[in-house]
Image 1: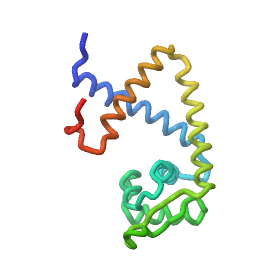
Image 2: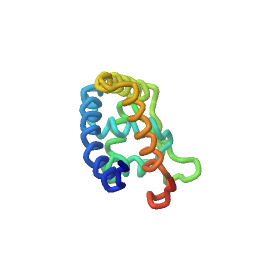
Image 3: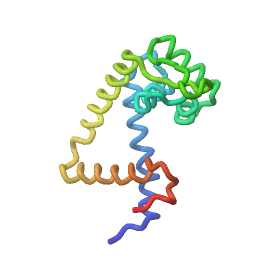
Image 4: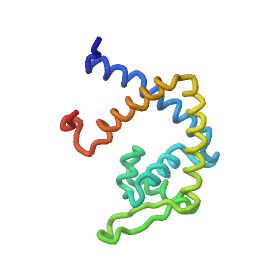
Length: 153
C-alpha cells in the first residue's frame, strides 16, 4: 500500500528527534569534558565547512553573532580554531580548525559512530540498506541549496 506524503512527513517528524537525541547524547558522552555542546557543534560545522564565516556558524549553532564571537574567541584561545580575515572582504571573518581541533572532532566522531553502529547491529542487512537508502533520499531533499519547493524528485 502506498504511503502518503503526509504519513511520510509525520514519520520523519516523529523519528528524527528520537534519533538526534541519541546522537547528541553520544556526542556529549564522547566529547572532551571541558567542551560544551555549542563549542563542539561549532567545531564540527567548521570541520565540515572550512573557511565558514562567523555568521554562518552562528546561524548553524543558533547563537547571536556576539555570543558566537565570544565562543569562537574561547576556541581560538584553546588553539582549536584559527580565526582569519577573508582575503576578498576584510570585514568577513573565516574559521578553520587547527590540527588539534581536527583531532578532537575526529576522535569524538569516531567514538560516536562506533556506539551508533552497536545500536544498529540488531538490524538485518536489508534493514540497514533501507535505512541508508531513506537517509540518502532525505539528504537530497534537505541538503539541497534551493528551497524545498524547488527540489524535483
